[in-house]
Image (cartoon, rainbow, N blue to C red; front, side, top):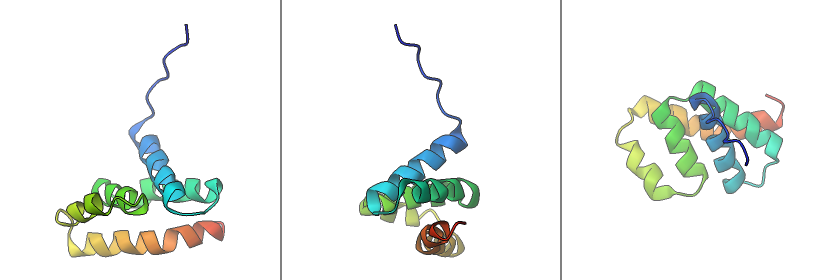
Length: 93
């Protein structure tokens, strides 16, 4: 009988979810999307991170619904992250 896997800590799950959304929504290499996932877990709050996961994964209705619960500053920061983090990760950061 196989042992049950322990659930990932919340931060690790958030990073994994963001990396998976990056992979699903782009043609970037897995290592780059792993970087994006780690950065999303570190740099975005929970709502911003969920928005990124939905937006990058092509779930536009879910992403749009989250905008109403974010301030203008949070929206701007999340959009900037979505636009810049992948290329920064391609460049090694």
